[in-house]
Length: 585
Image (cartoon, rainbow, N blue to C red; front, side):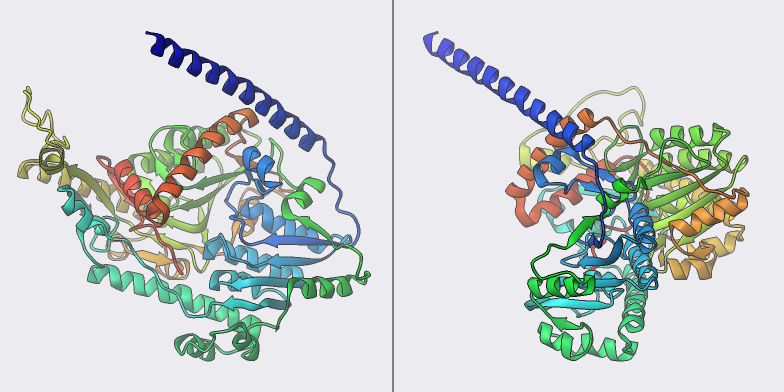
């Protein structure tokens, strides 16, 4: 008893101390937030805008108060379209003399990188300087940095110029060791989303489609570098194939970069461009601070609704980093019923997900289109479910290197009987009132008849998906069937096939919406709305702690853990999503 009281009192005291510390910590956070809100940002003369490519520019700007407080501003990152508009504004700002690209890595996909790159190319036409610098220059960072007038790399750094590769993790062997049978149903010979669960390596069909779009992406990469560096694409391809760039000095010699410099030498060159002394500091300003100083972020009213849809499509509401079906139906309905909103631009950056949620979003957008123009702008991905929610638009814009299509459906129902029985020693028994009352239970395999019924359901959803494309794109059923089958296409390929109307970015889609709705002066209102700061703090703190712990424990296996987690989220519901997690190196 005495031991229990001692333990209880110790725990109670620890709880009180933790509560007091947490209270003062929250007060400190609120004080910092208040100070940040009152801080006035001024651009000032001789300003140089910093574009840090290591930041991931999500569709909607990131306002992470927790990371911002602990990381000195790293939590405030403009959205991709915000960044593009900031660069465009800076080109006409007399206070801004140039742009400095920090090119150590690139946290963005190739379509997002294309939007940034295009904005930087346009900025240079103003006559202002653009410098890019990196300790190590990766290929996707080089893609954007090639827009600079001068590209410098650390003398002892690195330049990657070896070509593209895409590697997929297959876990069929792991499932077999665990005695788990992934019962998979799909339609579309290229619909390879479930291949990591049912194969040890790529199928022939998947290899064909992956080779096709990877070569398209790489070809686009070579064209952009060729235009910037004045080197023909065949020569660039030879440099990569023959591994001619082993050291930064090789890249300098072959004119891929302009020189080898240490950071202080680049700073000195920027100062000379600004005509300031060597002891003076450069007036660097981040994209976010420039936007705040010039009030470039949208307000809460406007005549064109810009709705950002980023992440997997999921059923339900209030799901972080996902397109929650219920939330987006309400968002689109609000924009549809708002008389002051005369057009909708729907920005899609999604590999797909729930077929049911995709259908619900498609329905609401179809209703919106009856009363006002609906224009879709595609980001890095608008595939499978991402294409499902796009196909009804009046006009669809994509980048050359957008990945889209993947018109197909699948579902997964794992049979865990062997795992429970043989690995854990758990068995199951019960009664039921109907033959199919326990259909889909993970405790037993499906019967042949149940498999037939589930496949019939998948086939029905696939037929509906194709019909949505037929109706939305005004293509024949035969044509849609030939370009469907779950196959992934690049934006350029999709335009040739009629799945996309034009190549361009968000601004092109906004301009199209303005023309269709006859709007002389555009005022954008964005969705989703920002969440309450305190709600963010509490939620983000928990997420950061959980993710940090898992990454520390699993190390390089964290990606496999994420894959398994996503598979669990997909089970039992028909899915329209990309083949796998695509990481192009």
